[in-house]
Amino acid sequence: MQSFMPRIEISLSQIRDNARMLCELYGQQGVSLMGVSKAVLGEPAIAEAMIQGGVKFIADSRLENIQRMRDAGVSAQFVLLRTAASQAEAIVKVVDISLNSEIETLRRLSYYAKRHNENHQVMIMVELGDRREGILPCDLSQFVQATLRLPHLKIIGMGCNLACHGGIKPDNRNMRELSEQVNRLEKEFQLNLEIISGGNSANHEWYSATHDVGRVNNLRLGESILLGCETVGRTTIPGLHTRAFQLFAEVIESKYKPSLPFGEICQDAFGNVPDFRDRGLRQRAIIALGRQDILVSGLQPNNDLAILGSSSDHMILDSRNQNLQVGDAVNFNLDYGGLLAAMTSPFIRKTFVKVSHSAAV
Ligand SMILES: *Cc1c(COP(=O)(O)O)cnc(C)c1O
Image (tube, rainbow, N blue to C red; front, top):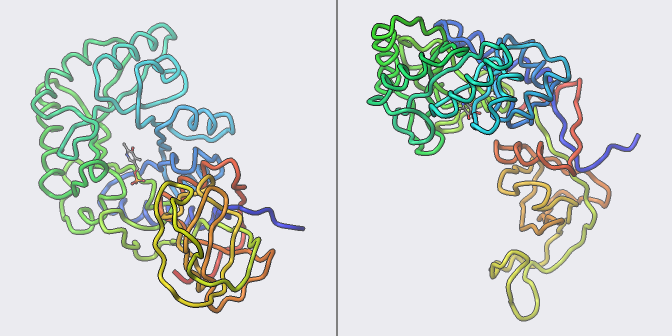
């Protein structure tokens, strides 16, 4: 059977292994995990692999992805990472728990929860320095007070998110601040906050170094489970698979050509004026994969290949000693941006592999 290209091959067993090893690691200090499925568009088989690995919650930023998983029969507590007031009615119907930072959104969630006789669980996000979502600590009391007045909502926890916009590292200082805010609010309002979600794949370094996680008892992990790395320095977490996703594309031309373009230089397809180094006559391959399919900077060629450039539909490779033939498959490892683009592209077929790739990382 001819394999379709371009395609992404997904090893569900490696994703399951990663989830299991991370559940064990974080479980040692009482931290549960939410498996974050947004980078894979809520692909139900991947969510299942995370659940088999031990995660109890599946979190996604998009309602459509959560709906997709529910329709496919995935059974978990579903958490919505990003809410919007305009989606309040759908949120209370589709999602168990949502992360929130605006009282207007909570008002609407409460309104629709009441109307549909649902009880919606909310987690309140605290801004601890990264300057993306969250309530400033000085405004928290007022926010909690206002939320407590809203019927059909239950505050089940608090969370924070770092290392996304401002590039701020989770550390003992900001994690301690989160715990202190939790303790303070519980006392002030006689609450019991069950889930304290301290962050994402960037929290690994903090977790590994700390002897006291404080009140933090949950993390929301996408990249660590999918790609096996933490995200402060993008180092591999020992024991995890880093090649669960492999992209394959087809060689459609392979020829020796001079490395320098010939003629008068003008703008390329994307408005840049290119600049090339003369490397003499080189064997080059063109593959049927371009910027409409993929984030080119998110690809790492596995073979002895270098990416020379790309346009909408073509990628030009220096094939060095590979002697690629027309029809050959070239494969790439992906970073988070590459994974996101590959999973989102309608042109790239998603396939699942049973046998794991070579263990080399
Ligand atoms: C995307 C996201 C995560 C997961 O981030 P990773 O770096 O993939 O672990 C966690 N929390 C929130 C709020 C997110 O938006």
